[in-house]
Image 1 (cartoon, rainbow, N blue to C red):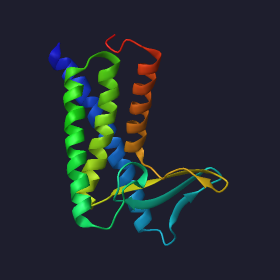
Image 2: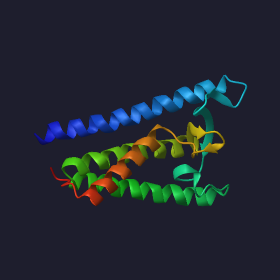
Image 3: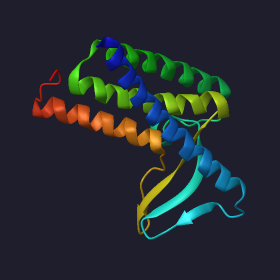
Image 4: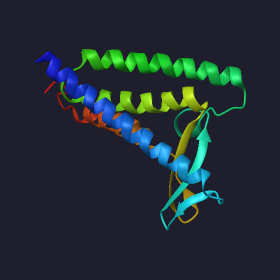
Length: 159
């Protein structure tokens, strides 16, 4: 039974990670063959590749390599903590943490491989643009929002 649950959890993590990787690889591929900065543009959505060296939504983005490495090390330790919480959790909380872990793993992979995280989803209404983000960010954000809602609503996370 434990093996089956572990395999299901691993499949969820791998699915999120692979979905994130494929979307980033595809956008990077499209960007490389495109002469203009915008890959896709519509009334509410643009696909526009940027390289984020900071954390969520480009916060703490600096040109200093030592700060980038320090930030990457902190992110690594946070990912390890989330992974440990995942092993200790059950029910809904476990799946929320799996979403957060898988998204964080996807972005951490990019930090190591590319030295930055490719963000490309630009939601906007007229001239108001939300922060540009990627698929991994969607899972991290959804996981955090669901976690907050379950805490406020008082849903028993172990069921």
